[in-house]
Length: 266
Image 1 (tube, rainbow, N blue to C red):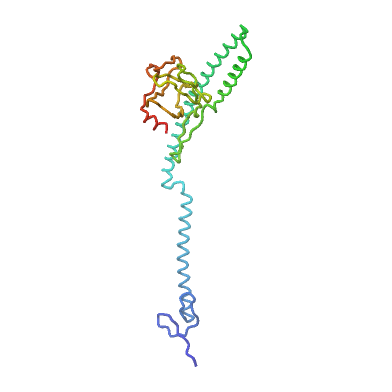
Image 2 (image 1 turned 90 degrees about the vertical axis):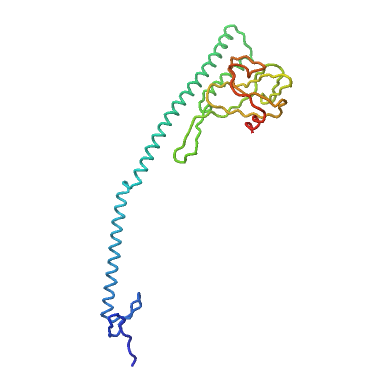
């Protein structure tokens, strides 16, 4: 007769084992197996209680998410950001209003000049076909310039990823050479190229466009400079052209050595 395996209970139970526990692999008698299951159930109830406690904590965290300690910090950031944006927007509106006022005043002056020419031409009947073409072109130019979107643009600065700093900037101008002091300078390629024929005297050449305010970018390329000196500046349109324009009281800029000009235009 084969002897049966005894109960593995630590209390030195002498009863034969009735079953094995799949979890701990102990062979237990019926009494101690029931006690073992009760102990596992108690441990399970403890885990369920901890789970219920965590559920309550989680529910409270969801309810109280609006009073999280970081919420105040976020609210402060939001309020300061909104204040900065509103201040910047108000400044931009004011700046744009100034730009548009100057722009419209400038067009009004041009229109007055054109109107005067048209009245005089009609009164004296002193016009031909070419005059009509030029005046019609002048009207079209004024109409196009009135479109503010072509005169201004919104420029975005992405140095701050959360609050974009924007500013009003004019678009790059398409400047050409037009007026010269004397015949020592000639223009080619529809005013995009200027050539100074004399190496012994200075002269002046001006662009076609007029500027009132703001910052403008004009790109120049110097192919040849004989005496390593050149002057670039701005002056009043009422100032007569002259060979030494840098001496004029209405001229503003600074004289540059050719090495500095080259680095600036690179």
